[in-house]
Image (cartoon, rainbow, N blue to C red):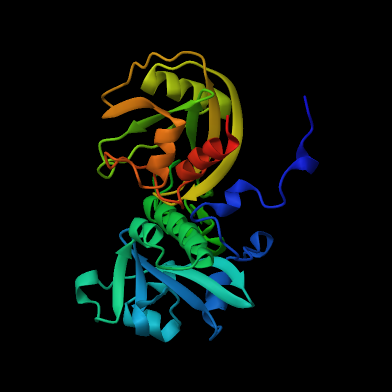
Length: 315
């Protein structure tokens, strides 16, 4: 086996995907149970208000958006600060995410509530804020869906700034989860395998993907999912990059897989279509120049980076 660590690029591919630009110092070893209360006493605290998968954004002059609210501004959209999460610190300022109670229909014209996917696809905020969005959205979602102890069923309490829930009834501590998802580009020398899900935008084809199951390696999940969804057996597997994916709290683990057969047997309960694409056709899709309007995911998506890396490799 070749040891390639010192030949690797200084900036790994994962740094170029969407939601990966988080620059917050999480201070994971210093989260006291009162860290949120302490942070909220700092007048420099910045808050990301969210509600039902939407981020609240201030509309600035010129049409730009600002995701950062100070304490007074966050009160204006009725944030529930008792449920706020301390994400960490940036430039000495506390950074928090908090659920907002004001419904989007009641917001003033200067504030918009935009769904996370649109914020990401349309590039409405910078990379650092988008990374903070991924962190905050995942933690708020986990806390909202784990309000009761899974061991005894009694209500649990938020601790450590939102990174732990404690059950006072039985003493059990619960910690945030991240769901690992394998996303893989199956390739031969000159073709790649792309599928289309029923929820995709018109003309969109992407890499296959699926959740990694308990007791399963990444490589085994890549092989299993590709065989189940497309009937393609894989040989060698290599890891390429990962991406935080706050829908609600996943980690996309991107890999390449070597195809051992070409006859597709698509699982049409999962996919609308699955087919092989040549290098030339795939590049037209990536560049949004395909004559039939077919396309690959946008540049922030890890699937885009997998496809581009394969095309640029020349085989």
